[in-house]
Length: 131
Image 1: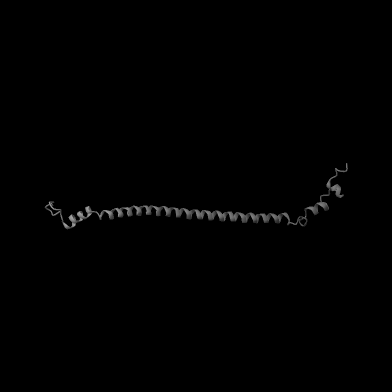
Image 2: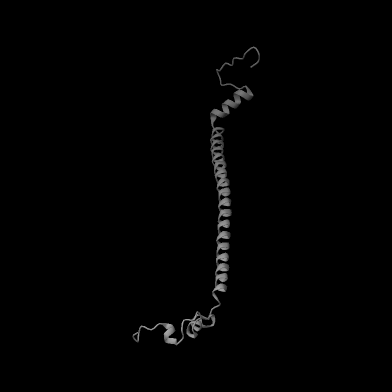
């Protein structure tokens, strides 16, 4: 073999016996990487995924609850707007009636109906039954 084509095991001077060389075990050891073994890291990732998933669910349920509250408030708002429109219509009717009762025509009607008064030269005809 040429000088640059040697394998890692040949460089370290050990034969491939099924065990790792000193270099390989040092390179892959948890202490070397400053991390816990792979199995513990996975449980940390699982816990992180659990926390993130839980937060997503909490936010989702919170949004659904807020949506239902918003829908209820929208229904209440539309009912109140309808009531407001009815009350505004009623207010307009009352204002028109208030203007009408201040007219001479209304006063004459009341005088004829309730007091039986008539203008000069008017003749009142009554039915035999008294109406």
